[in-house]
Length: 323
Length: 281
Image (cartoon, rainbow over the protein chains, first blue to last red):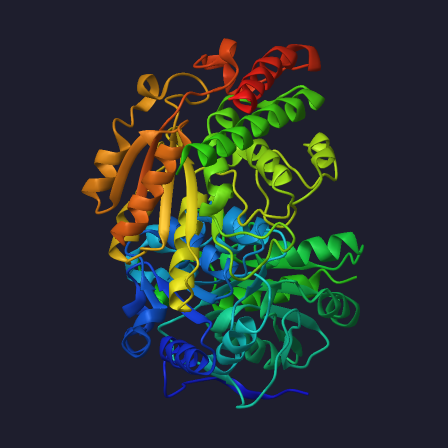
């Protein structure tokens, strides 16, 4: 079943507001939910949470490493800590703390990294997390999710809070994005079908790339090519069944992510295909082996080769290589 | 602490030293110096200060201990075994594949271990999280963290020193096993910490300094921190390798190799003789 609105549309509220509202509801329902920030709470609209739950809101200041280990300690005494910073800081800077205090020690913190990839935009390359998924994928037993709209974001937060595993949630905070109908349910480790197709599969991650990918699928349809589009949703555990079904049923795959092509969704899909001996034409759309730079998100998608036109071209090329 | 109690605590500490040496000699290598220096503090904690139940290590009413200098795991394992958390024979499995006693502390493997440590600076930070988390749940449990002086070179320690008083972590006590040495040399020769108590006081902690091998002094320092009703910081002046006379304060005592039952027989004999003297007294 496809519970999607046909294309990415505007939600009346931005992702960050959906994030803050959902955490507020969670905190009201469950006294174990706490939030930690490293002086970036305002960037995800957490002022209301801080006002309503001053004893459960911990702005640690600009201390990402201490924030992560502190959150792990809170989890060890029974709390459900959400810990947020920009994706670049929480994963790159606090990588060992995530690995040891949270992962190794099985202290199930819910890590939230905002402004993934080109969403770092005018903060520039220093603030763009283009390798956060690659770093987090190597942490044993972590769940990595990138919700593509407000509906899947809300579902993710509610279900991560009730899940005993360590999470890394990639959060596009600024966009007003609506892709799924209200009440749709999801599952960690399951891709979501955005549109059916049999000629090629486009696997995307996050709202920005869902938007570009759906546009590319429309361009392909104008030429009579039916592209299957999957919102992969969870990078770890990856929906390997959906990947292998796509290889079997459509014979060509393009992985699309707002992240480095090294170590992210494309790598995970490639590993799955190669180990299964799928042998289908395959391409990765994402940031090549380079650092980020300053620009608007749209400008950077062009600079990095991540537009609908780039996806369309990669799909055409993959289809042309089909045996 | 009266003299009888102090003798009891000394006995626990020296027995832990003996067990630590035996344990390290089974595979022949391990962290000797920093284990021996922390035994007295552990003995004080497990002789009444730290609420615990060896029959129920996960008891909700317990106080928490984070051995942030995780490489001193053997000293804590010896103390836990002597307190009855697991059989003394288990100590002989240290660092063997599949053991519940890995080189560095692991909260998922060992009864009585509250936090996984080994990457320095993180344990004190997790201890802060436990303290704040317990307060957020209006629970009365206390949290103790033991760090090393060399560990204080880690930036994360200073993040905690700054944050704990600001966040009101008055249920947290940090003890620094200030044995003056780290892996390669004396701490003062590598990147000097100076007087950590002076620095912690400047960050807003209640601080105490005492002889880290004197149970009564350690106990009094803990009581002073409890009375202060603010985050407590105790500088334990210790000797790395304490109890093995030939190795005390020797740079090479951090991680030793080639230990055998024969080699550790001498310090064990000395410690045993001292224990017997205490019995007679």
